[in-house]
Length: 214
Image (cartoon, rainbow, N blue to C red; front, side, top):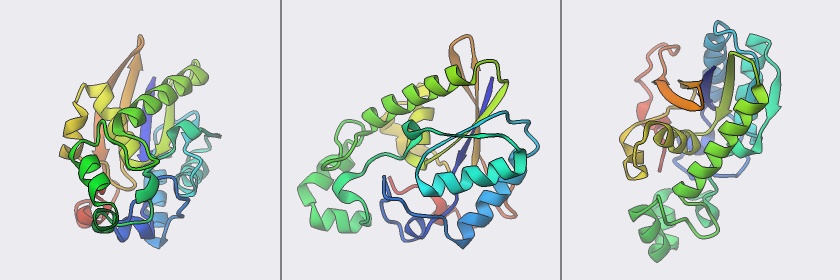
């Protein structure tokens, strides 16, 4: 089975560099265009089913993929973004100013230390892997599925699949509207393609805007 992972399109909070987490922020105009571009690419990939985060920005992106490909949608809360707790709605600078001790601890060891009332990256990774296993079981004999989710969840998931320590979480990017590909065979996951953004006109023009905050 091939699994096509799509990160949702851009939101205003992405552009403002705010932690979104589980806040339900919709796509902005640029994000809708990114979703359409990703959907156009997915329309050529013979996807049989689309599993998606229940948050609006991912659901909107998944709907675009469904409209273009004809694949049915399956909401899957296990693919929702990391909970950033008390940091949600804040920029990194605001979080550091408002919660100096907590932010210092969290940002120095995000794998193990969660924001107040939030999730650590290890907790996120475990949830993401469970959700992926459940989706693959649910898909059964389908040869190709898509998962529409979020930057932090996808990066944590890919670290787990590729055996990359979560301490290296910031060493690669998963851009808004990007497509990454994983193969599932014999109970083993293999990362095939990471952060494909070739369906955008100049894929590198907005890298600083689409880069994940954490």
